[in-house]
Amino acid sequence: DVKVTQSSRYLVKRTGEKVFLECVQDMDHENMFWYRQDPGLGLRLIYFSYDVKMKEKGDIPEGYSVSREKKERFSLILESASTNQTSMYLCASTNRGGRSEQYFGPGTRLTVT
Amino acid sequence: GESVGLHLPTLSVQEGDNSIINCAYSNSASDYFIWYKQESGKGPQFIIDIRSNMDKRQGQRVTVLLNKTVKHLSLQIAATQPGDSAVYFCAENSGGSNYKLTFGKGTLLTVNP
Image 1 (cartoon, rainbow over the protein chains, first blue to last red):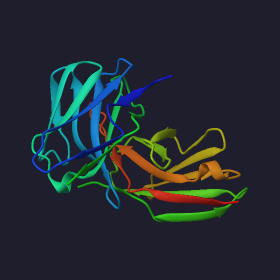
Image 2: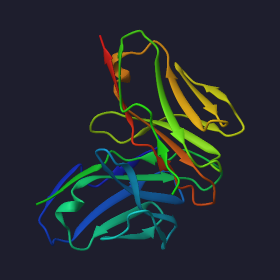
Image 3: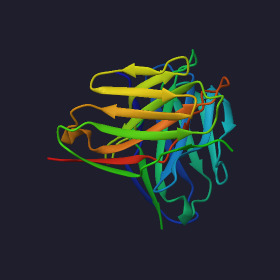
């Protein structure tokens, strides 16, 4: 069974803290994605990576950075957390060949106080 | 920019009835579409996909219909069960090599016993 795991299900951080969200997939997928999900706004793409050490900005990259040092792991970094970054964060992965669905992790509910 | 939208944000049906969830897309270049199901507290789960060279595709109790003329996508669930209660998203891939998906905002399906 394919699997995407995220380091935390729930996280509470203070404004100004540096926050790391980790995602690991065991499917040897080339592409990995970070989304945030907010009520009424759906899923919005923050960053994605199509190979190790490669990254591209999504639709809402401001306030975020990413790191992909190994193929199976994709990290999302909030350099200085703000209250408007309180959200559900979802990681996904997909292989490179052809059109195919993205496999999602369970999500991390981040609250910034 | 291009977007994917849903006609109905909520849908309530009786157990055993058929459900139809609709989605409009605006990017005529999109060539691949996916339906996801998201249960409360979980990440989106793949249901079924369809490529633009098809009009219809069937899975187990689900059927996806694609009408490219009016840029409309629908998901039909036969004999809806309480376990089908969830938020359903459509997503489109508008081409390119990065496999980015654009998601609709979702429809909440509630199945009444």
